[in-house]
Length: 347
Image 1 (cartoon, rainbow, N blue to C red):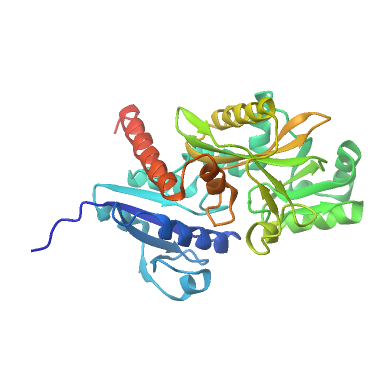
Image 2 (tube, rainbow, N blue to C red):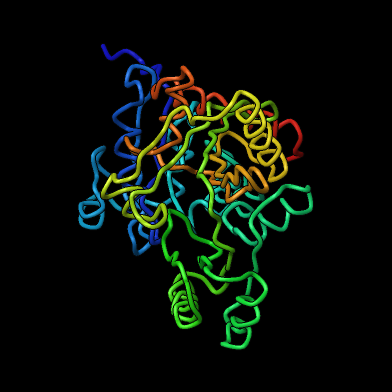
């Protein structure tokens, strides 16, 4: 006689059509390995680079995801049972930007992380910066321009206003994909063209001489922070290779800050988390000008990496919350948020 499976079903959604497809696959593999199989029935659903949804293998790599898996659609998710939570581990556009979150809202299933609005805001770095500015949050000086306005004349104006060197990045991308440093006008033009390959909006920011501090945030209406961590890049800046390939960056956890500085950056992270209406989780990244403007908000990641060398889980581990327990709490937060929204929404 078969006994009923009392485990909750967790759909691990990964892959995707963005340039961060590979990062998402690596993240998903580690989450699948860490989640408690006695608590959860794990269902890996991969999205190929071509946008096809497939029931994947638990250890699907980026290469295998393209070639294997049973074709399916998003409509299969509500059929997996009543006790179900989706864990989107999709980085970048068409995953982290509110699109998949909107789909999951329509399907009426709980999901880990921020909702549609917050995901879209945080993904668009230019809009996120505008909102942070309206809340009086200090950040590097910046300019956001659309592809149609990217001309040598406009770039010259921006370089005159912000000064060189500058960093140029796609407005809607993460994992340092498409990010370049420009020290002169020819490099600035080239950097703009590189960023435009990923998005029609680009962000140009002043280069900051300062320390890189990150804080993990966990919670919904009431959130808490991890200890801060510091990144000492192995390259000229904390780029894609540093994050996922070379492991050349040095991570200092906890960051060597005074008690007052630690409290200040943690409170700032909570303020930014609230200002952008985040839920569940986020990693808030700062620059720290010790003898200048202090902590400057760099960006917010609503689906931070969960690879073994990623800061988000490392910071929580250093704060006393182990990887498996972190997954448990994220799933609980997803259920709580879904219940709250159900109460506040007439259907």
